Length: 319
Ligand code: UT7
Image (tube, rainbow, N blue to C red; front, side):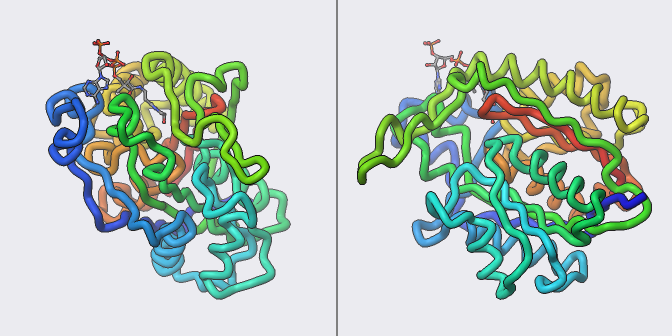
């Protein structure tokens, strides 16, 4: 049976760092409030000249180098983003061109903060089906562009960045199981409810969120989907070496680890330095922990996404 395995990871954070102190000079907020309620100390902000495909390119180059795979050997590119460069063409096609290759399948996937987990499960299925052998799976976001910087309830939470993995066919997992879910009836609690029509923005181009409802929903579904995924994989939760939930809020991450009875040491945390980078947060954290030598070959890792849609999902894999 064909299975897929992550053979290289990469990530990129734009150099500009925006601290809580800096935000509190312009907004009615404080470093103490932001840290206490979210765990966030700082976030990275893309330069005005950088788009999601630029961030994706840097992360992809690093993942390809780590994998020892050339861009021309990739036969599928999936980019998870809610902040694409354009309405169309897709950011994945722009990334393909920036990588200097052509021909392979390339498409975007829109599942907001669950985007990377959805994209990984999608690429895994392409590889298991036997039609594709080496996929580049990317989460790339410039959420700073869709924030109302006068809304202290949302703008302090997010940051920009990209993460990527190379997924290759093999005879051993790799990815043991992925579980994806959505509930469109909850679309209103986290959205950017606008579109472009007749040369104008209709609705709002800014992120809106019912923070409390999102918080409760996230803790509940991340707990449920971890159990469901472990069962589908035939692996006990206690065997999971690393839990990498979507990096939204340290209180959500710690609540999920506690519900799952996983010790704090097995929880990957980057939200303190990256903020919430939506579809980029999981591959950014994965790459950081791999490069730091904390996630090692053979470790069992649970990746989890949750966000707008509402969408949520998890993948359980052996590195
Ligand atoms: O990718 C998934 C997307 N999002 C999430 O996962 C976010 C999930 N939700 C959360 O992380 C939290 O709900 C927040 C961090 C957004 C808010 O934390 P909270 O503990 O739920 O606070 P709250 O919304 O209940 O607000 C408490 C107070 C309010 O003041 P009043 O009404 O009690 O006077 C807010 O106006 O805190 C106020 N507040 C702030 N104060 C200082 C809200 N934002 C700020 C701020 N600085 N930045």
